[in-house]
Image (cartoon, rainbow, N blue to C red; front, side, top):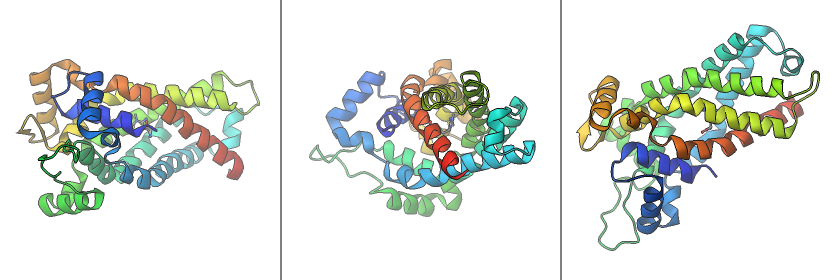
Length: 270
Ligand SMILES: CN(C)C(=N)NCCC[C@H](N)C(=O)O
């Protein structure tokens, strides 16, 4: 559900040919058809369960270790926000490294603008996710598969701390004492946690996407600092918030459903 929005976000962050969201959507639809929005989706679908298990599993277990309480106990007595933040950061840090290669391949495939609809259009560089992984490995070495992972780690570590603090705080505020949060509360708290965390995550999300592409405007970056400075010099402060609007529209439903699943699974098996 969220992938088409993600493709528009990634294109806005890494290509300067689009004038805005509408222009990007129209161009993708016109030149690449509806399928253009779904480029690079297979790896995220294959990896989302593992990546989310790492994030939510590490978060829950770290919180359990810090507070010596189970998930159900924590509903009655909210742990301190410092503990929630530390547990969220730990989950974010570890999920970043498991996500890095999948995210890299997703971004490279999403950025392929070539289309089978137009005769004479050159074939895309990557024929699919496996071919993309093999080509990156061959051309850029094993470390190439982790390109942008430093920026990804900086994006996910603190912001996932805020993500869980927002979620737990909102659930606690809108749930009567001693009760479990309702599905609506979980979805609204999850949706706002998603949007809130992306506010702080967007600058490093832009840098991460640009590092993963290796260059923007034919200019290769020498490192993360060079990417930050060059992007700022050439495109101004606004560059660090590219894709934020479309990403927020995506983040609300995606995170509402994510937290609803998390709560239901914990109630069933926790
Ligand atoms: C700000 N960040 C990095 C997050 N909130 N990450 C948590 C995962 C969110 C969900 N899969 C999504 O793509 O929105």
